[in-house]
Every structure is written in C-alpha cells, then in structure tokens.
Image 1: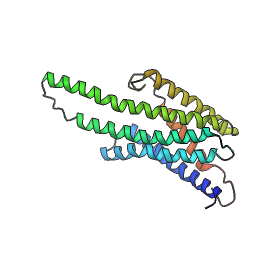
Image 2: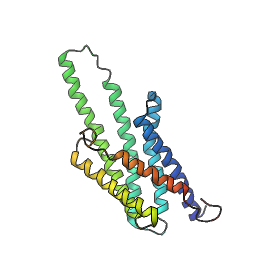
Image 3: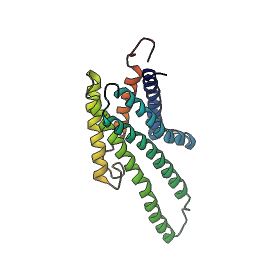
Image 4: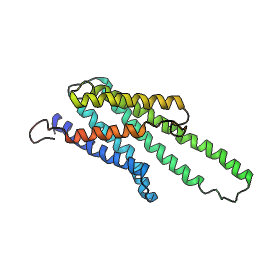
Amino acid sequence: MNKENQQNAWIKTGSICGLLGGCMYFAAAFLTMPDLLVYIAAFGFGPLLAIGCTGIYYFLSDGDSSPRLQIAVVSAIAGGITLLLMLTVQQSIFSMTEKTPDNSSAEIMAVGKRMNKGLNSIHYGLDIAWDVLISVATILFGYSMTKKTALWKIAGFIGLALGLLLLAFNLYHFPIPPESAGSIDWGPFTAMWYLFIFILLLTRKRSLPGKI
C-alpha cells in the first residue's frame, strides 16, 4: 500500500470509528440501557475516538507537516486511553460502593461516605486528565483546520473555541469536573463537534478516482 492509499484508508477508518464512538458516547450518556450495553458503549468510546482522531491527523497532515499535528494526535490517543481508564475505574467504584447496606449504623455510613469521597476523587482526577488531553488535541486540530478553506476553516474556529472553553473550565474547577461543580460541561458540545468532523471526513470528495 502506497502512502496515498494508506492515508485514504486511515481517513476512512478514522471517520467510521469516530462516528461509531460518538454514537456510543451519546448512547451511554443519555439513553436508558441494560448495564452491559452501557459498559460496552462507555468503554468503547475512548479507543474509537483515538482511532477517529488518527484519521483526522492523516487528513490534516496532507500538506502540513507541522509538529502541532503530531502533538494533537498523541494527545488524542492518550486522552482516549485515559478516558477508558477513568470510566472503568469509575464504574468499578460505583459497583462496589453500592453494596453498603441501607440499615448500617450512622458511624458506618459516615465512614462509607468518607471512603466514597476519597474513591470518587480518583475518577474525578482521571476525568479532568482526559478533558485536558482532548482539549489540547481539539485546540491544535481546530487551529490546523483554520488553514484549510471554506467549511473546514469555520469548523476549525469552532473547534478552537470549544477546546479552549473545555480546558479553561476544567482547570478553573479543578479538582472537581465542571459538571459535578454545577458549571457548564463543554464535553458534549465538543463531542458534537467531533461528530461533525467525522461526517465531513466520511463524505469528503475523493482525492483521486477510485479512492475515498
């Protein structure tokens, strides 16, 4: 497979995986499903997003060899892995802490509450780490898109703004994620932006006859 075929294959694979990951994100976040399906959707989102962002990298790197794109894709892949870690740890904590009997003494309940607070701080920290990494990727991808033309330029400025907002709100509310602090969570808006980008990638004109 030559370089151009490899590039096109990665763009197509990335856009499909990214769209699938986005659907899993919204399904896990907003749909009522059996626990097993929730786990599949939640745990699949991070790895699929990492593959999707690799497709974005291959698209944007055509004619742009700036280190910013390599930093962006490394941040996105690290973010996807961190998200998987965060969600598995979070769900494991929730599963274990739900087993405290309701008829426990006040002392046991107080100890359990302190333990829950400490355990929750673990996935809170991982949550913010994931948001920081994907924010960096979004900012750098968005900036790179502003160097394209027409729709890509507009999408780039939107991505740049969303990445900055996501990063700023997470750093401001640290160590509590913005949503848990009662503030605006820019994550769903950023997820919708990525979905739009993956759709653009999948429906873009083929670079050469017979190629995606």
